[in-house]
Amino acid sequence: MSDMAVTREMFDQVMVPNYAPAQVIPVRGQGARLWDQQGREYIDFAGGIAVNCLGHCHPALVSALKEQGEKLWHLSNVLTNEPALRLAKKMVDATFAEKVYFCNSGAEANEAALKLARRYAIDNFGPEKTQIIAFTQGFHGRTFFTVSVGGQAVYSDGFGPKPADIDHVPYNDLAALKALISDRTCAVVMEPLQGEGGIISPEPAFVQAVRELCDQHNALLVFDEVQTGVGRTGALYAYMDLGVTPDILTSAKALGGGFPIGAMLTTSKIAAAFKVGTHGSTYGGNPLACAVAEAAFDTVNTESVLNGVKEREAWYREGLDAINAKYGCFEQIRGKGLLLGCVVNERYQGRARDFLQAAMEEQLMVLIAGANVVRFAPSLVITKEEVAEGLARFERAVAKVVNG
Ligand SMILES: Cc1ncc(COP(=O)(O)O)c(C=O)c1O
Image (cartoon, rainbow, N blue to C red; front, side, top):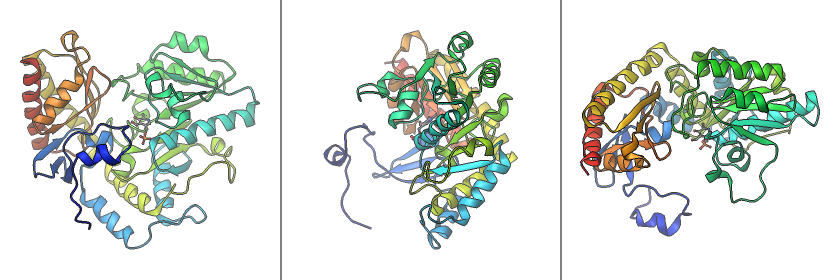
């Protein structure tokens, strides 16, 4: 390995300034712990933004990576490969889906979903059926199509003309959706729990009504499970707990447990709208990515891990409620499984980042979701001791913010 000395200042010198990373540079991780260049240890409640579903360097993932790394890394889609076919078969067996398309990220999975929905609608119902309805505060990735479908102007504006025929309604607002949806609607795209938008759960009746409206108008229901998928909410995919089955589902983040991979799942009937050459990606279904994802999928898709998520949610809620009882800074602790948000109350409006920064000083990594929500998306197998230690650090961080 190179012996070049690396400092945080180098980021500002050589990287495009679209991120503002923390001052510390982690160099090693194990389970829910990270260590920086100076050897300082951190508890990780951020999980690489809901990616490291099995923590850092989980033995099953390390072993899959090493084993595949010595066999075959890449082929392109001119050839298929064993890990991709095994992973696809397991995903099909475990979900509503009959077909899988692999890519490299959440945005790319959603890009594929949006293009598929459009092509399916145009092929089956005619060229007018192109309207996509999505939800304000939704987030679907950073390609131009996905930011345009995402409901946050801050990410989509300022890049010139957007892809057309995309409309937004407020999440959980059935009347607004009813007023907008028509036979011209090709798809309704939603997160089954809004992540980036602030950890907002849908009303179960709302989701069921969305499904019914889609059926009435021959519109496809697309669930973006990039953040909620692969065990995050305590089900393999969040739709499984909602009593509603989507037509297309996208998965990424935790799918590779930290190795980049995305997937779009759908039925055979809908998948048929993608003919040879309609869509593609050089790295999609890369054997190295699929081998690691297969190990992650096998490990997460077990009763013990999925039930463990619910158990861990209870540890978090109990600890966070106790902290809040003492400091009274959160209006609500919300979310599901290990995708939880502490919503700051009136007094701390717009200050979620202060909690994140104070946590960092206490050697705890957390996330935010908008200006008012402190978000946790830790490893699904985080230990009781790691949760307790992290919450103790969080309490010190909260005390710092509250006591100024
Ligand atoms: C719900 C959802 N969809 C899509 C994305 C985009 O995924 P990626 O950053 O892998 O492109 C994200 C990322 O935060 C997400 O939360």
